[in-house]
Image (cartoon, rainbow, N blue to C red):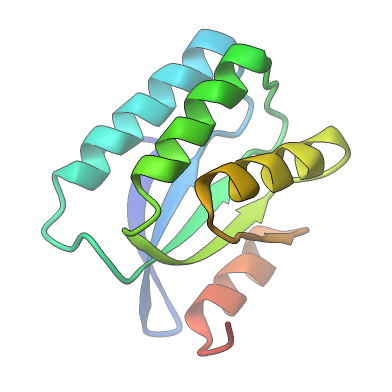
Length: 123
């Protein structure tokens, strides 16, 4: 298990947390690649609930392009997606990524809100 990608149990539901807090540029891209490898190594490859935390990250054009490709590649793995740290321009990036990858992700202000929603049966 990587430091920035881990399984947690919240209200009886297993959730994959991808933590990109505070990253930018090459370190952000390296963490995404590490999380991709982690995801590919899992037995379960569908129906996963995922929380992506991008609090205090900096995303440039190259990073955005790479992350869009990653989201597209792994879209069938994740059943429910929540994002934290999506404020200001990050919200626009989330919309671009979701549109490109043909996925949906729900933004939340806090991890607790996101985890509660992911653990619920609400879509």
